[in-house]
Image (cartoon, rainbow, N blue to C red; front, top):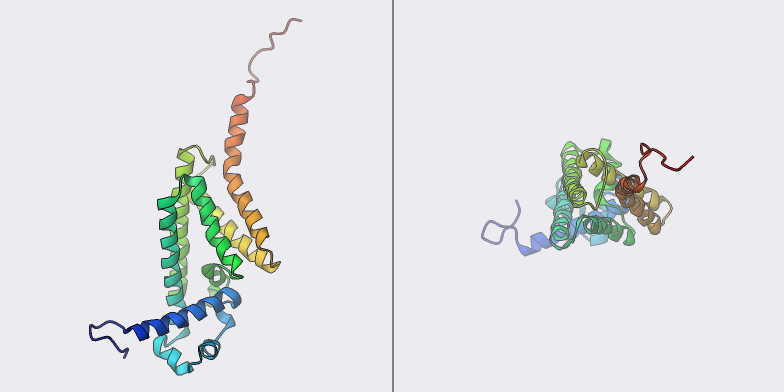
Length: 222
């Protein structure tokens, strides 16, 4: 049974220990994958016993679920900040890409992107939390894309939700490929093309409006 501070809440020592475990585990997942480390790796780095880890997280699946929940909370707070400070949908998406870029600059991968590659081997509770993370991102992206389309910043066909799925998949995939080559700029270049594609149709439409209509008769003298 977990020790409390007398108010029914975990003590600061208890919370601090769990956070240290989560910090190390998050880095290991982002660099090796969930199946690429064990409790022995965490115990060695923190100089604690494996029994001490099991005290906080009895099973590795529980640790994994806690990692996703914490990551989603932090990521969600970052999105709220972008919503408050972003000036226009285009800037919001640039800052969204910046969240991924900041992870790559630390030689890591998106936690949930790494876990998605191992989806079939994850416990059901982790799979559920993983879908929740991506669902939340798709909802946010769809709102930003629709905002941009209404403001004339973007021009794309089809539902914003469908385009949001494409953007999310493209960014996560670009991270994986860039990691293969150990090439962060490769990710940024791919991300720029993803954002540029949102404006291609707008440019095409503008060009079509500027082009003389083919239906207008040629009035030049013969």
